[in-house]
Image (cartoon, rainbow, N blue to C red):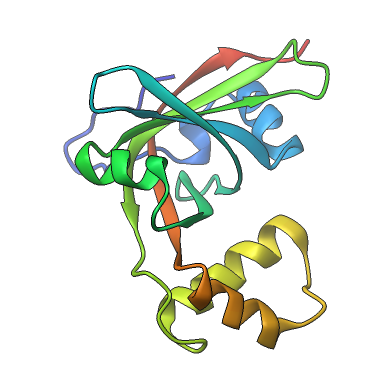
Length: 157
């Protein structure tokens, strides 16, 4: 489903713009394949855990600063995330442009706070938040934010 086009419409989709059957696939899973564009134009794929907010059409994932997907997206922010149903027959592809949080630099900075929020939405509570916060800084993690502007796929049933 493409986004609607009224002039006063903010960029991105809302729940009402997405086929509810396509959104059902995204709600059932938090693992998808992120596609970015390599320098030579070929796709680069990575599996990512994600959280998706249908009200803002925003997909977020924790990523590491020195990985190929981050380098690719800094060069060209266009990305797609494929989310498949457990049986593999239904799928949804979410497309849009990516922005990033700052790289985690201190256990209590804004980037780490957002990484904690993403973790909670994906996996629940962590057994040692202090250790998690230190690891986010050590790993140079940041939040990938995909603002969805287009979705398509094969809905269930």
